[in-house]
Each structure stands twice: as C-alpha cells, then as structure tokens.
Image 1 (cartoon, rainbow, N blue to C red):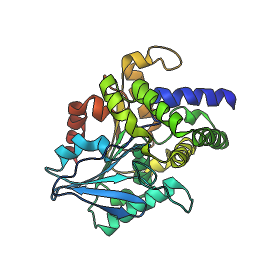
Image 2: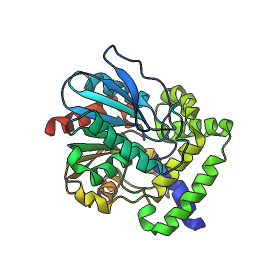
Image 3: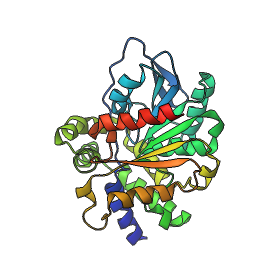
Length: 308
C-alpha cells in the first residue's frame, strides 16, 4: 500500500484536486439573498434566466466564483453554495457521510426552491459532487460543468476499492492531525505550487484557505479518495463539460510528465461512461482556472450554457 500511497500523494499535488480553495467573502449585490438549505449555505444572485448552481471545491466558498457570478447574474439566476465545514460554515455535528449529505442538500435545494433543471457548475471536489449528482438525479438538471473535478480521483482507477478505502483512511488521519499553523502553511504551499500560476494571487488567497474546519476537510478528502462514480455516469444523459487546466512546466518531469493532449485524453477516459461528456483544456492555468484564466473560463462556460 505504501507505494500506491506515495503515488497518490504525488497525484494529490500534481492534479491540484487537494487543499483547494479558501474563504474570501463575496460582496453581496443588492439582489442577493443568503440562507441555509440542508447542510448548505446558499447565496442567490440575479432574478431571471436559466438557473445555475455553483459548487466550490475543498475548503472553498463563493469567493472562487466572484467574477463568474458578476457575469452570470445578468442573464441567469445563480445559486452559490458553500458546503458544511468550509469557508467558516460549521461542520455537521452528528456525523455521517459528507458526500451523501451534500447530495441530499442539493436535491433539497432544487426541489424546495422549485428550480427548473439547473446547470451544476462545480470546481474540484465540487465538480466530483456535480458529476455524482448527474449520475443519480439526471432528471433534475440540464447539464454539468466540472472544473478539474472527476468521477474518480486521478490515479485511483488503478487501485481496488478496499485499497482506496485504506489509503483514504490514512490520508484522513494525517490531515486531521494538522495544527492550525500547519494548515496555514500547507495552504500557502498549495496555492503557490498547485492552485494558481500568479504569485500575487497565491499570496492573496492563501491566508483565506485555513478558515475551513480541518477535520471536515480531512473527511471530505477521504471520501473523495475512496469514491468511484464512473459506472453511475451511464445514467447521466445530460451534457457534461469537463474543464482540464494545463500548465506545461508542472507536467515536464516524472511522475507527472504528460502533454496537454495526453492529459485531455486521460480525463476523457475517466468520463468514458458518460454518454454526453466533453473535455476542454485551458492553458496556461493551474487548478483554479477561473482565477488564472477568467476570460477563457467564462468563454467556455458561456458557450456551454448557450448550447443547452
């Protein structure tokens, strides 16, 4: 198991699906409203057009979508959610699987607010949750955009289910043991090396990353490592856009050496069970595509929304 755990650790850093995000508060426009649905905090922006639900990644909040919200709210009703335990939100006190609770809360949001087949847009772990929702509740949505979030953690497709669970438990134990100071240091290193290309962006957002609950972050990460939602994607008969970031220097050395075309093809292979999935690469960018390449990200998202 140690060999696979070391490889997974490299993949955790190399793909940027870890330690993602943080906690700056998005300034509320006059038309926004905030409340809770299930375990989610929900911000609503805009008053007309197709509904879009934005799901940030690990330790994230609506801040990651700030420019996206500013653009979308002109022609869409936007629901920006925060997962329990992230961005200052308290973690659930009564235990249970966090993925399950997030899924149930998204379903509750759609049904309670009578949202007509929204588009789910998820970043990182939020993208994984959006893909899972598409496999389980395709009738409730009209499409998914997953930003560097996949139905199985990259590299884990080579590992059996029991081994994934063992690796996830070990990762959860290590992450849960971090002190607040270590958590802050890890967040800074992550944003500098994995999160974004621009050092100024890394310096701006890294101090916000440690506002999330450490133990909740560890549990989400463990559930992500153990999860495999590929088979369920055969039921996801809605259009899916996977956005794959690529920054050539990050993939120029082993064990992560691959071209942009190879990375795109690899992501496509992980989505092979989804009948309407397409992968688009955006480069140069790292994990937070919407921060590194906001104009190109918005263009790709806008084109997808217009195609529905």
